Image (tube, rainbow, N blue to C red):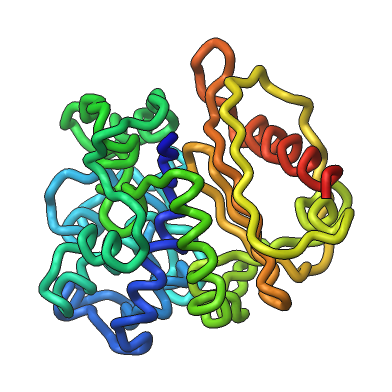
Length: 313
């Protein structure tokens, strides 16, 4: 079964390509058309979500700087927020720029580069993952542009057009077997560079180069992952179409030894760099009525999946 990795494409495909091929501190403002940007746009800043880019813009084909510079509907939706250069603001479009930089540097298509490096599959797919209905981006799309919301295509991921265009930030899928193979390479070759503390956000998030650090505390994933001794590489598959589970309250405290990344369509990855332990969840975020789980309901589902896994170890 093929799972749409959504934003797990960022740490599992685009970040490794960047670490393989790019100077992390080269300024790309001029080549990307951001000449009047308030600070440098470097791969390091893009990987740590601190280049001053907003979280989201619809993919309309308009040059990205022009689109941002002319936009006047900020703060009318949670996805439509201004960002400040040097401060952490999670951004899909930063990874779109990383894909552009890779293509400029290597003169090859980003998806071909990613498939060659990882063995994972970029859309369009011959085997379509489970259909995901539109989410909050449909609401933001209607605010951000007068263009029609993109029609669903079974061989394309939800993120292909509706979010930032899939290049760089989404578009890859994989079977559990392919993920397991790639993770065994990924954790030994790239994890150390990706899990260094690089930037701290105003709300306490800690970002490395493509990964975020988990907090300890009651109801935290770190607490659950530390419940029993876990080591090695694990890919957990859960194909259930779930009713909203009970929400597990989370009271964060100090940073843990675990790092993580989530995917919009459901998958999640947790990594402990000290001993290269990795747990990846393959799931989706559909309810029994085929609507989307909310972010809190999805968090609770991931908690349930991990709790079953932790009890078995």
